[in-house]
Image (cartoon, rainbow, N blue to C red; front, side, top):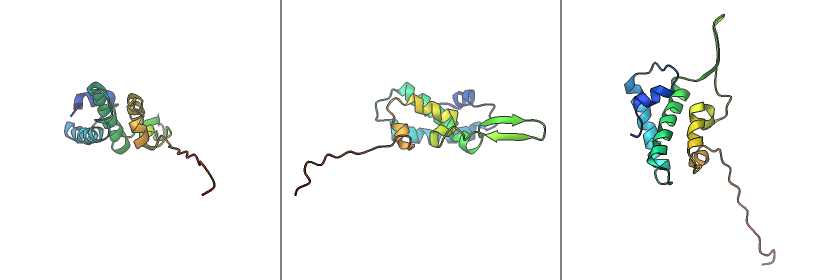
Length: 125
């Protein structure tokens, strides 16, 4: 593992999750980062940062969604998902995207569209 429970807790907003639950998210983020980013030339320090932010993103899309608006009278809450889809759906995922200077996460999350252009040398066969 490249990150720790304490590091993840430091960026989450008042998490109520147990250390064991956060560790399970860290394990998932670690597998993903290792498989997807280990061979793309990023430093160990950046991989650790991405793993931390991806862990927080995974928590935010499953257990502790980010709120963008809260109220007390008549109890109202609006959850974040207005940022975009995939990693763009949380500020944590957006940070992971920004830290990946190779663009690999953007490609894997469908953020980057690829167009292929082929030159036709001749219409005659």
